[in-house]
Length: 478
Image 1 (cartoon, rainbow, N blue to C red):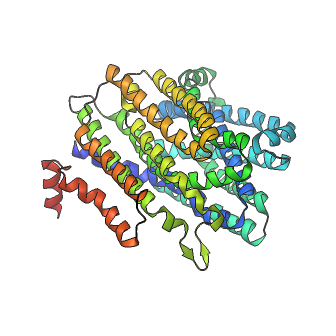
Image 2 (cartoon, helix red, strand yellow):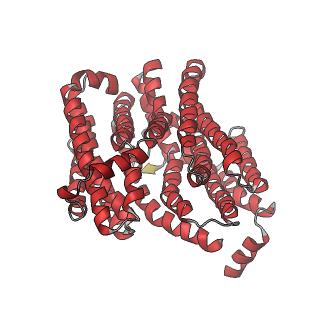
Image 3 (cartoon, one colour):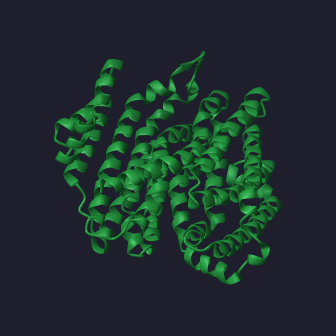
């Protein structure tokens, strides 16, 4: 069991680090955006990237999942046929998308960005096109287990995007156009860098309609799940736009971005988790292994959540050479962070339960659970925003992920029951509740925050959280 956990940890560190690097740039740019842009302008930027995130799922239409499945185990010639078929399919559908969005960019700008920004729609369509095409070689690098290349390209993505934003936004003062232009140039550059990986592995004569249909049959059912997932992630911004104003969208997006630090960890873990549980051999101890991994992951996620909500106020007000990490007009956005971050804690709990539906080949439940979550998210957003304002959007997100996790647990109890370590899991939740209560009851000093920070691991240790084998392993290494 321990060797399996070590293997999962290694894969998570390698490919999770690459994923985190690719997303890290959005967090590195927050000090720039929140000190330069008004709330309204940042609201437009957040809607642009919300739309990009949603359309990436649509334009993949499940073919990425199929490619990972069929490219991996086949021989070299078969790999070429599957990759060539998928790549040509992506090129055709992406070209149609870019053409459509440029023909109707005027009305689409009002719908997507809430204003008259037709040129922005053209740039966004090109960003999506190049992002889609450089994503494919990154997927291939994962399948072929080439972590050095994968990490290197992810690092280039961060450095180039960050540098161009500093140039276009801070120095040249190009505003929202500068943000989108820096993203487009980065996407084009990464496409040019990664295209040779694809070029060596594809051939037009290898394109196979039969294999394309096979991949579509497998992958297309994943599209609804992806759409529902994006609704969970992104609907709140658009509902806020229609129920409040663009300034509120900008403020909420700034706080939401901080809460998404938890999502970075979850997605980094998922990069190693799905290949791991799919390759884990069946046996009596497989479910025990999954239960133990669940305990470990949620323990870490709980600790990160505790640290985040304790120190978030200090983080956003951190002074760097006379400039705070967050612009002062965005400081009040921290009120959204605990709820958004807690939502992603529940999303981690949901992800940890995926082995059940995948190993029993009942993946239809993924789409059903995602649909339940998406429906809850939309409904709760409309109700809670109406009664309690923007904080209602954050609470709606949190509750929707909780419902998703509970729904999948109920389904797995019928198709793939796992005996989780509930006594340990409940202790994690109890300590999180205590920390949240203390923070919202008392005004703590820095020393008191330090004490509260260490209370989580210390409290778990002294309440018998570790089993005998874990204590022996820790003290033996010590």
